[in-house]
Amino acid sequence: MGNLTWCLRACALFVVWATTAVTMPAQTFKTIHNFDSTDGAFPWAAPVQGNDGNLYGTTQNGGNTACASGCGTVFKITPAGKLTMFSFDGTNGSAPFAGLVQAANGDLYGTTSSGGTSGNCTNGCGAVFKITPSGKLTTLHNFNYSDGADVLGTLVLATDGNYYGTTQIGGFYGGGTVFKIAPSGTLTTVHNFTNGPDGGFPVAGMIQATDGNLYGTTWTGGSDNNNDGTVFKLTLSGKLTTLHSFDLTDGALPFAGLVQATDGDFYGTTEEGGIDNYGTVFKITPKGKLTTLHSFSGGTDGDTPISPLVQAIDGNFYGTASYDGLYPNYGIVFEITPKGVLTILHNFDSTDGSYPYAGLVQATSGRFYGATFAGGSSNACQFGCGTVFSLSLGLGPFVETLPTSGNVGTAVRILGTNLTGATSVRFHGTAAKFKVISKSEIQTHVPAGATTGPVEVKITKNTLKSNVVFRVTK
Image (cartoon, rainbow, N blue to C red; front, side, top):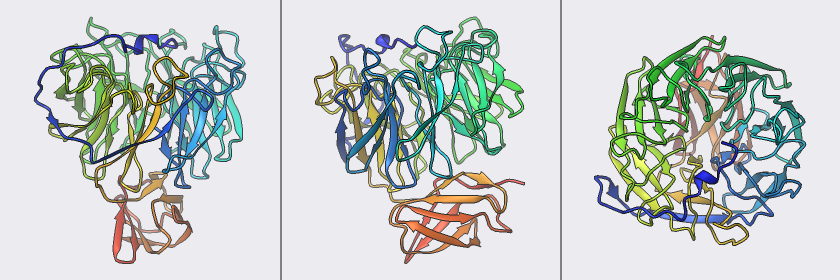
C-alpha cells in the first residue's frame, strides 16, 4: 500500500451511462491552491480547521528532496488560499497520508506512513508526530514493525486524553494494529489484527462514538471466505467485536473510516462491491445491522469512494468518489441523504483537480473544503500535483467544540466564524462562563449541571449551534 501507483488510472477510460443519481451543478466551487511539488504534492487526507480559523493538512510527497519524490509536508492554508508549509526530511518521517487532529491547546497530531529512525522497514516504518501551528515538529514515536508500520489513517483523540490509531501492517501477526499513544509519546498496542475473522490491514482511522467505544473498518479479513473487510467495535481496553463482515454484494474493501450520525448510526463507504462492484455507501447500526444506501455504477455517479463521509449541519452526508463522473476518470463530489438519495455536486475535469481521495471537511462558516490527489495547473507532476478547493452550498455557519466530550470543569475551545460579539454560551441550555479569544475561538469550561446535548453560542440576534452534540461524561 506504500506504493500508490495503482491509484493513478488516468489512462483508463470508462463508459459513461445514465444512473439514478441526481445531477446538480455546484453552487460555488473554487480551487484555492494548486500544489507544485516544492510546496507539496499529492494530498491524501482532508484538511482540518484549526482554532485560528485556518486549515491544516498534509501532502504525501513534495517538499524536501531528501526523498526521491519529496518527503511530504504539513501545510497551513487560509480560507483565501495563502499557503505555508513544513517539510519532512525522512529522518522525522515521510509520506504522511493521514490527516491531522488538533488538541485543545492548538497543537496538531499526525502520522507518517514511512520514514523515521527504524531500520526494520525498507524506507522506515513511519512515525507519530506533534506539530505546533507555527511549524515546530516533535517526533513522538518511531514505529518498528513489531508495534506496527505504514499508518494511513488519521488519529482520534479519545476521552481518556490519549490518541488512538491504526497501522496498516506489522504487529504480532503482520496484519496491522490498533495503538494508543499518550501526548508524551508512550505507545501501547491495543489490538493485533490476524487478517482473519477480526479483520486485517486497517487503512482508515477510527472514531470514538457516543458510547465511549472506538469504531472502525478493516480493509480485508472477516468471517466469510471473500476477505472483503469488516466493521468493528473496540473498547479502550482492547476488547474487539466484529460487527459486520462484507461479502462483496453489500460492499468490499472499506478503505475509509466511519462517521456517527445524529441518529446514532454509523455511515461509511466501501472501495469496491455493491451491484456493479464500483463501491457503496452504507449505514450500520451499533449492533451491526447493515444497509446499503447506494451502489456506484462506475459511470456518471462515479466509482471507488475511499474517503470518509462527513455529516453536514443540514443532516445530509457529503463525500467524494475517486474516479469517473461526467468527465471519465477524474472523480466527483456528492451529497447523499440518510435514506440514500444521491446528488452529484461537482465533476472534476483535471484542470480543477482529479482523484479526490481526500474527502471533505465542513468549516464552521458552512463552506466545505477538500483536496484532490492530482490535477490542477502545475505540470511539475505527471498528472498534476493536486489541489485544495472550497465548495459553498449555501449552508449556514455553526460552531465546533474541541473536545466533543468531557467532565464538568473540562476546558473546551469553541471554534466558529465571527465570534467576537458572542453574548452567551450554553451547554444543552446550561449557561457557561466564557472568554472570546478571537473571531474564530472562544474558551470555556463545561459548567456544573450541564447535560449531553448541543452547545449554543448566541451572537447578537443569531444563535449558532454545534455540529455535533457535546457528551458530558461522568
